[in-house]
Length: 171
Length: 363
Image (cartoon, each protein chain N blue to C red):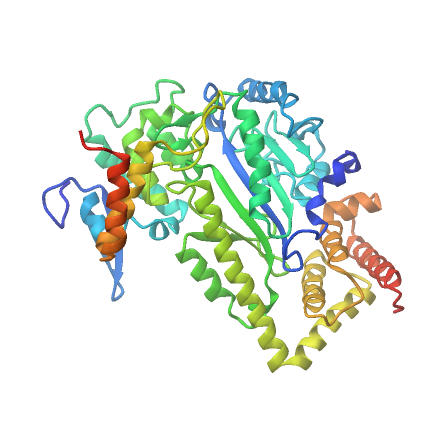
C-alpha cells in the first residue's frame, strides 16, 4: 500500500483523524507520518490496548507482504503465531520478538513513539556501565536533531550536529 | 493462615509516612519487568515451565544481597483470604493473587519479599521486581530495584534485544520494562473539580493514572496512582525525571487548590473535614468505601492543619487495616461476615480514640 501523501513509499502508519465530526483515514509512510508529527509518544501512548490490537491487525496485513514473513508463520521457538498475539495481546517467548520483528517494530513505534531502547543495557557479566552504546546514542541525537530542525531551533541543531560528528567520525 | 507479622515491618515500611511529601504522597513504587531468555512466556508456559521459572529464580535469589533472607510465599498454595491479604497490602498484583473474576491462581505464582524490595514470580512476566518507598522518592526506589536487577541479571539469562531492550510478555512494557508510580492523595483537585483537567494534561505528556490498587482498579478515597505510560525510547532516568517533574507540578496544583478552598470556602471545608472525623469517630457501621472517603476528608484536614487529633501514620494504617480481608483476619471472621461493617466502625473508633488519647486530647 502506497503512502497517500508522497505516493512513493510504503505506508506503515494508519492514522484516523477526527475533523468536524468526520473520521478521516490516512495511510502514511514513516517520513510523512513524522512530518505530521504522529511519531510522538503522547499521541500513541494514549491508544487503548483494544485499539492498538485492531491497528496491529492492519499492520499485519501490510507485514504479510514483507518478504520472509509468512502471515501464518509461527515463532520457531515457542510456536506462537501472530494470530495468537492478536487474540491475547501477549507474546509467547523472547524469540517471538525476532520472529515477528517487522510488525512488532511498527507496533512498538505506535505504542511508545520509538522502537529503540535507550535505557540500561543487559550484560550478564555485569561489566557494562549501563550507558547506551555509541550507535544508540547517535540515533537518539539524530532524533533530537530532526526535532530541533523542525522546530527551527538552529542553535540547538548546530550543537547536536557537532555532538553527532564527534560520536560518528566520517570515514 | 499466613502470619504477615513474619515479614519485616509486615511488608509495610512504605506506610510509615517517613518519606518526602508523605502527607500527600503515600508511596513511590517502581517495577521492572524481566523474563528469562530460555523459558516460554506466561502465554505458552505449561505448569512445569512455570515451576522451572520459580526454581531457577529461587536458586539464585539466596545469593543476591538485596534479597538475602527474603521470605518466599507461594500464592498457589494459599487460601484466597491470604492472597487477598497480600494484595490489600500492595505486595502482589490482583493478577498474581488470582483475584480477577473467575480466574484461579495459576501454578507456581509466588512472591519473594524483603523490606523495601519484592520480586513477583510467574506474573504476566517471569519476574516483576519491585522497589517501594514511603512518600515521594523516585530515586531511592529506583536505586533499590536497580540494584536487585543487577544482582539477578548477573545470575540469570534475561530476554534482551539490542534494539527493543528488555523483552516482555506484552509489548506495552518492552524496553526498560519500567513502570514508576506515585500514589498521591488529591482531594483539593477533586473538590475544586480541577482533577479531570489535570489528568487529561498528564495523558498528553505520556503519563497515566490508576486507582488505589493499580491496574484496572477504581479510584477510592481520592487516591490516584500516577505513572509513566511508555517504557521504550527513553532511558530509565529520563522517564523518572519526566514523571518526577510532572508529579511535582501536580503537588503544586493540589496545594493551590487547597489554598483556594481555604480562602474561598473556609467554613465549608472546616465543616467537611470535621464531619468526616465525627462520623469515623462515632459511626456504628461503615462500609469500606465510606470509610475510605471519610478518611480522605480527615487526611485533608490534617494536611490543612485543621485536625490535630490524628497523624498521617495512623490514617495510613487505617487505610490498610480497614480493608475487608485485613479486617476479617483481625476479627477472625470470614470476609463475607454480615457484621463486617459494624466491626469496621468499631475498629476505626478504637484506633481514632487511641490516637487522640496518645496526643493528650480527649474526645
